[in-house]
Image 1: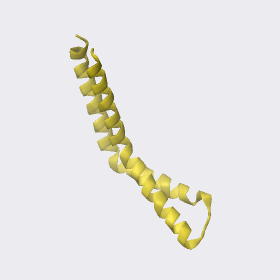
Image 2 (image 1 turned 135 degrees about the horizontal axis):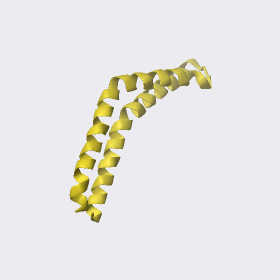
Image 3 (image 1 turned 135 degrees about the vertical axis):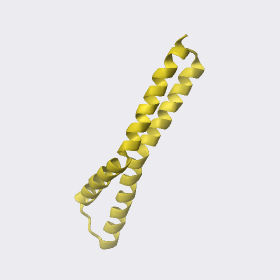
Length: 89
């Protein structure tokens, strides 16, 4: 196994991690921005107000994207295990 193969595996791992975390992080970011905008408009300064909408939004994002996320992770793992014997030899 040479340096190029290790860097390629690390790059693929980071891309998969980014793809898997994007739906959850974007959902939390959008909901957090919307709640902050609502709080600044209405001058309601409740710290716990953003917690429940974020939890619900992330749960919905996991329900909607969970199948795709699992398929992506399983496909990456299968490709990694299939390619390892060729890299070691």
